Amino acid sequence: MLLLILVILLNTVIFSIFKLFSRFCIDSLQAITVNYWVCVLTGTMFSGINPVQNLSSTGWLIYALLLGVLLIGLFNLLSYSTNKEGMMATTIANKLSLVIPVFFSYYLYSDSMDVLKMLGIILALPAVYLSSYKKERLQMSSLLLPFIIFLGSGFMDTFLKYVQHHHLSTEQSQAHFSIVGFGVAASIGSMIVVYKSVVGKHKIELRSVIAGVLLGVPNYFSIFLLIRLLDSGMMQSSAIIPVNNIGIVLVTTIVAISLFKEKATGYKVAGIGLSLLSILMIILGEQNG
Image: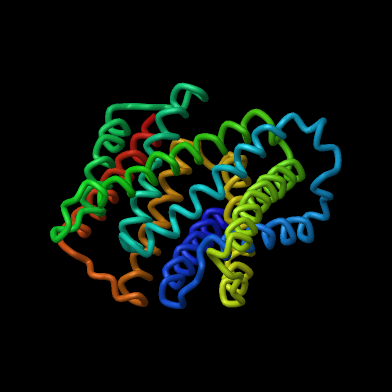
């Protein structure tokens, strides 16, 4: 249970930091790149693992490379969407992507799936739409961004569960995999930052570096502890992911309304309500199975 609470709180901190990027004129690419180097340093210090040692014999190196690409792409997208579409809409679209790993858990790991759980998954789709909807702006682009996040986040959770199930049987391998994945993301981000600096498009800013440092520590542990949570045997992955995601949605929504003064419109309230109902049905369905 402690792992679950920590993952929820760490993800809430990450989304809150994202929300502050626009307020303090933070260059998100620079901050996210620094964040990944901090993740590598944090993981190395915490685990005592040499990231480059015995890489060729790990069996998961190719997956760590893919993880790095996913991290740098999805994290920048989450940062952009948090500031453009709002903290609640981005968080809900991100976390209701649970329908994707739940679906694959049924086929890949023989998780239980009954009518109640299936109905909960179906209800999650309009919940994402309503939570992202803005009455004053009906352009397709306003729905496209949360939908891309929905797909990307769902693939990320499915991918992490797959790698954990097949390749990460020990805490040491889970930490090593996380560190290498962050290192790949940091390297990709650094190349882009250097390129933009050389061609004169962007200057490296101290405030963006500081933001990246603040983001790095919670980000490392959010991924590492999520893998530990999936490996804990606390529940089937088709139940752990919904419970984790709804906790993040609820806590982040409270923070968005109370600290960042986001408007809880009727559409967003309806989306939150449907998300609660859909995830409750998924959890009850898993227990009945």
